[in-house]
Image 1 (cartoon, rainbow, N blue to C red):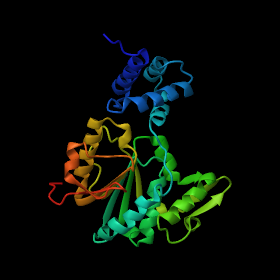
Image 2 (image 1 turned 120 degrees about the vertical axis):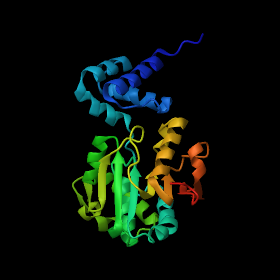
Image 3 (image 1 turned 135 degrees about the vertical axis):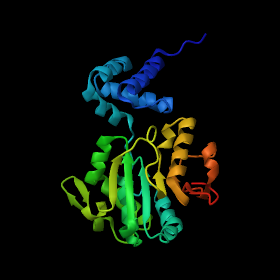
Image 4 (image 1 turned 30 degrees about the vertical axis):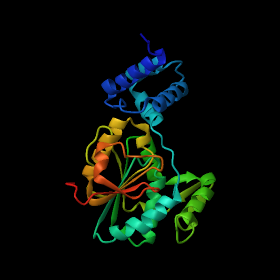
Length: 278
């Protein structure tokens, strides 16, 4: 009989404790990446083992926000993978323009880099005034940062280059001001963005969307959980609506992927089939 690694057992007990004590279900997360994040979280909270972290989680309610923030991966950048945004502008925006009102759901928005990128390109396409963007994440710390719209100035150069590569019509300075060590995005970009807590694992349909972006989130889930979330996206999209995933994500294995058609495989842009019941 092969006995499991003690730390793997500790990890399963941590996941179970997080669900039973606080209602957050991480059982569908891919174990290798989750284990690394829990190990790093334990070190950051001065716990020698995952078991010590579990005990802290059970006994100290103030620990929960730190745990949730540590388990999420709020890593992104403005106009990340510019070719994806360029494809959105050329292939999806012309279709969105046919709607009198446009709903967009940015799921797993992290600190909001891609939300503001989208707002800028919609503004330049003349679509922003009739668009509502719902930006959601289960990490309240990341959501708070997203609402501020402030990013390190050290990242501004890369953001500006990405913006131009994405087909931006001005310069990024047109939409932000630099002060001290940060750039602050123009407040007007927030006027049609609603930030809200939503957990892809536990929560249901969020809105009736014409476009959903969820990039580099599914890679942290097991295949069954990825399929569950794809079903959630299918049920949240209007017929003919669009789904954009991360460049390294594939949905070909998932039963719920049968209703999506790839319209740009390299950019991971999919369209919900016209024959869908959604």
